[in-house]
Length: 286
View 1: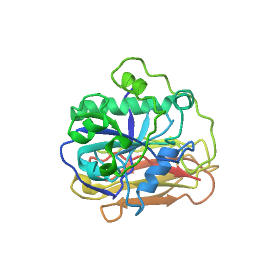
View 2 (view 1 turned 45 degrees about the vertical axis):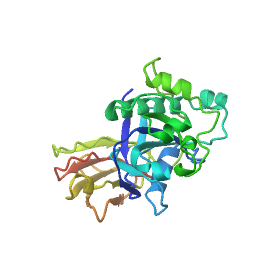
View 3 (view 1 turned 30 degrees about the vertical axis):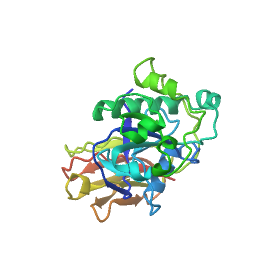
View 4 (view 1 turned 90 degrees about the horizontal axis):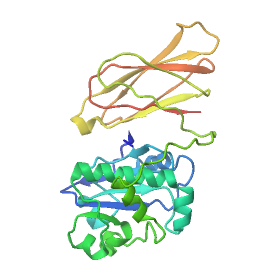
């Protein structure tokens, strides 16, 4: 399955060099239904840490925080030569727990490894500690990088790497998405916004959200301003009656949001007023 990568940029990164390692981590927390999003938002703070992607049990989607060409701040002396994935969960989890409760997450990890392997020409090979630290190319645990890799123990002895690498090599068909129970949280529906054509893209809302936000990093494409007109429709008003506000995002102001005013909102639309090659995903909140 091709993954949807939701760009959630972290400012915590350094320049990279030739990538030879695909490194698997656990977050040691963030185990809620939107754990990857929660961790990605944490990486947007001044926490001094980041990872290339955050992965949880929501099938087919990962949250991308650092572009693969740069070095995420997560494995010390190996940052520049690695691409890294933080997984929702704990290094203490057993093999049975991973396989029985985190199947979607494991398949997301397998698909991410497959995509990174293809893009970076890194073989899908399980490396030993000595190989990972000695210059070999392949896949390893964070723990296998030793003290030079920050001396951590994740993702733990119970992580079923053999199955994940089998799936990453195409050894079995990934399962279809599993319906998640709906719960009240601060994340909602996502909608693709075309980066160039300037047409209105509309979305009907299944809940009465109170605001919508965006974040992006125009600096990664050379600068400029991303400009989005947000229009929202209030329940009980005419079909063509919308309130509007424009959000402008640039390198100095990479995040912005609009508070929906006037009553309950059952739909909104977005109009791109720029031509930067950046895809935006609205984050709806309640």
